[in-house]
Picture 1 (cartoon, rainbow, N blue to C red):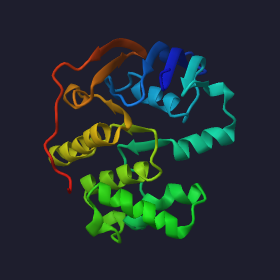
Picture 2: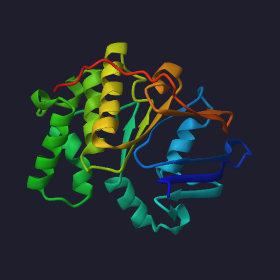
Picture 3: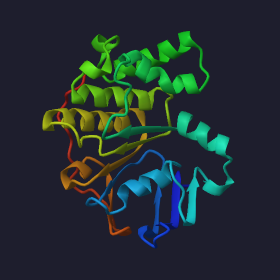
Length: 236
């Protein structure tokens, strides 16, 4: 059974515009998949459907064998909080709050006590190599450091799957390589399922498989034959 099963997914708006049109594919547990396409292609809309951030207009979406319409709202909220991690291009951090508090935030919503929250957050922060920045406000961090904080926050609940929406889009090339290297490390060493959204072929080739989307339709689904591997740049 696939972790993700999308069948004939359509996302339409009241004016008749279709962001997604008849999109179908499966993603297995433990895969690293890139969804690639130009601006306006529907790739981020697709991520929102897969991450239960938005619903499709028609078609069937199954996560871990269960159709999206079978989940109650509180079940979806719990699923997003505990089984899914999200990393966005704009980081979405609290700027006047330190690294530890930002990373621990999902644990607050999960109802985990303060002592255990801090323990889990510190583990995630160490994993992304930011032990020396624990009590720094996120507003003083570099772009690359902010994205690593966002990754730590996505990891803190040990999710089954990580959705990364253009995670290198606001970064310089060196910081982008660090982020991509870390995503590859999470996949190869920790077994996380990763879905990476990007408009760049070179970034997509860090994944094992590329789904290409254009004008809301799935153009191709190919295995990456010559996979790119980012240079090491994270703290051991």
